[in-house]
Image 1 (cartoon, rainbow, N blue to C red):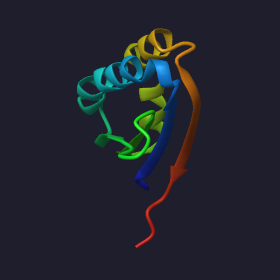
Image 2: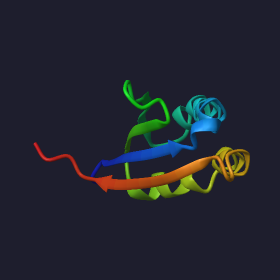
Image 3: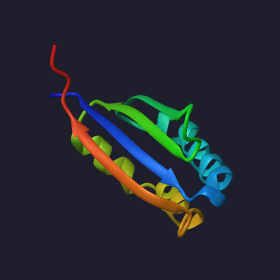
Length: 96
């Protein structure tokens, strides 16, 4: 089974930075407790506070896909509707 790395970039609308930051932070505890989550780390850009990045490692793609269907993800999406400027997600494999 190959570990999956996820890099997600979230850009908040300038007037909604604190809302998005708070809602992203709310995802951490529940996600880290999920089956298959190896790590789930939130970062904020030092030069552009509207830019956030999650760096995640999962035991498998299937477990990450299950994560994406959890209620706390749905709650985040509902709470930040209209507050996110853009979002990009990359599924990656570690090369040694």
